[in-house]
Amino acid sequence: MSVSRSMILAWAMWLGASCGDAGAEDGLTAAPDGGARMDAAPPGPPQPPAADAGIEPPDVGPSRPDGSSPPPGPGALDGLNVEWAECGDRDAEASDGLTDCASSSCVTAPICCADNEACCVDGTAMLSVRFAECASAADDACLADLEVLGPARPAVVSDGSGGALWLAPAGPGSVGVASRTRFDPSSALEAAVTLATLQGCSPGACQEMVGVGLATDTVSSPGVSELAAVLSAATGQLLLLSRGEVIRRAPIDLSSPTTGRLSVAIDAAGAATATFASDRGVTTSVHAGEAPRVTTRLRVVAFGRGENAREATIVVREVSASTRVCDRPSAWTLEPVVVTNGRGLPGTWTALAVADGPGPSGTTRRFALQSDGRLYTGALAADASVTFDATVEGALLGSYADGVPAVESLGALVYAPMRGQWELYVARNGLDVARIPSSTGATFDRASATKVIAAADVGVASVDQPAISIDFRGYTTLAFRARGEDGATWIGSVSDRGDGAFVLDEDFLAPSERSDAFDRDGVESPALVSYGELLHLYYVGRRGVGRSMGLARRTAAGGWERFDDGAAVLVPGIEPWRTFGVGAPAVAVAASGATTAVLDVYYLATGAEGVSLQRASREVPWIGR
Image (tube, helix red, strand yellow):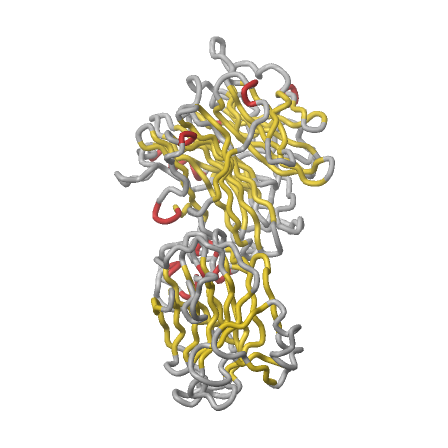
């Protein structure tokens, strides 16, 4: 499905900057949000919009994990790392001649960070044993959280800055230590040792190797772990081992004394990575996506072997373990959301929205739901259930022409911090998007609704399914499903650059041209969320009668880049609650640590038992900001 030339030319229009209550601080909120209808077509024939159509200036609210909000800047790339500005423009980079994410200069650019080990960050620390204060390995306090594995006890030596563990004091075989705590491999795990080479290593003249691994209770030797990273001084290599067998290797230089961190990581999908990051700023990694899946709880092991060593040459200063947070768009934890009064809501659920904002005792998460034309609101309870206990007050805001019934479709729910109120964004008759503010608390009344954008403003026949996000710079994006005069549909957007005026974005997301694509027959239900210096667009793609969820990300150059060459990130499953499709995504993200956040995608699933509210969640790195 294509967009006509006249529609494409319309993307150059500049739009008005005020409407309604001109002069008031007015606009959009920083709370990430998405939400849209599951049905495929805007209701009713398009009619001429009212003459006061326009677009209002934005609120600038917090969008960082710490709640801070930087001042907006004048340009689309203001505040972004300039090194990343060309990543995603499909041109070769000057530094090495490679294109976009294949270039070394783009490896940690936000647009390149999905399924990219270089962008992973440390999550929750679960184990940390430091040997600086150790006087002897026989001291129980020194190895209180570890137990000895192998034929001999490790030795404690001085490395010039305190005690350190030597894992190969004498004799053949591997000497090791293992954590007494077992860890769940269902989430991403990383085990690491901080080590130092006390002198330059040459083959046959120093400790043969040192390693760190994740092992089961039945491991016969610390070197035969489920997964392990090994520094082999004898061969000058970094090795990734699976159950004792080398599956990946890379050359590494240990000819001069160095310190660094050796780690092995496994993610929720079973992919494994071995990394050595030296204090000289050189990082070497090897990765295997086909490592055997591990389902039993694992121990952290550190081990070494040194038949040729006459003195300590590689020592361990610390053994640690933590969760490892990577951006894995297809790795979800799926669970249903209980709607306590679900059976009391009449009709079929068709649209959903979610947002975070202040509540009686801290941050609260509120929802909006559309069922048979009625709008309901509710809040997330402590037990993760939702009760839709309020309705939107007031009659629908009439029709634009005699004989055309007023039809309203839910799009977005946001909290506007500068006005101190919750706001609903709805599409009316496919002709405009209106904002309904909360009158008291979280009670909404249509009588105070104001128009935000009209279809005529953006040169299309109809607009619906609005979604809103404000990025870390305070720039606002409002996405919507557009329909042209020729019947073609696509997801378009308007954005402001902190100056209070919106411009229609030149980039838009149209149905895929690939015959095997999940979204070849239509794209709808946009849901926006901004994190990690990047705007993410979740959307529903149609192929025949089936609906799956896709992901596109806005590049620094301004275009939409589909994730994984257009692969779906959430598809209908064998479970009876999502046999037929997933739709109406609504997205919220909340910081879970200094560099991590939890991304929740709520959606309506259609199955043999009808429509249900579901949640797909994953932890993501909060890259950059």
